[in-house]
Length: 167
Ligand SMILES: [Zn+2]
Image (cartoon, rainbow, N blue to C red; front, side, top):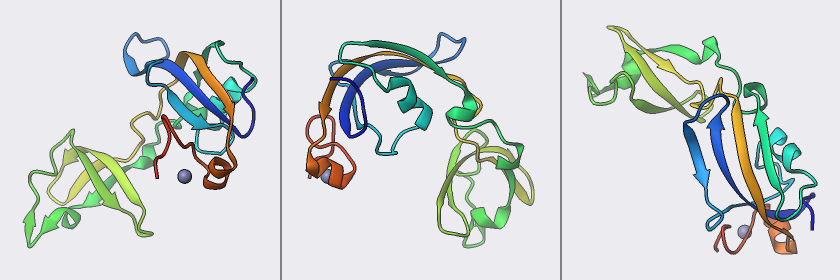
């Protein structure tokens, strides 16, 4: 069976940044990444590179940053008023430490994750770029399993059973 819309796919892979030997993520065949192909849950180009592969096939492809988590955006580095980090009139010292990850909520109530870059007197400089932004991603792996999704999986938009959701 080959990978196509509405199929459940299990893959193992190693993810590195292009041109680097550092492993960002390693998914073993014994505990593969299982997903519903074509459900729109993954990066479009990632699925495009797997489309039509069969069980047992190897893959080796690169997703350039714009097709992955985007380029580094200067706009995503923001000076946030220090008041945001005040609690009962005191600065939350243990949170505004350069290099530390912070979680905020934007005006629409969406969660935002950033990294503290600099602590100023009135502003805290925070980088809201995705940690993977600006990276070209190199995936090398193998297709472990391909099967048709069940109607229930299609209705839910995700995989059930091993490697999937449990209700
Ligand atoms: Zn479900």
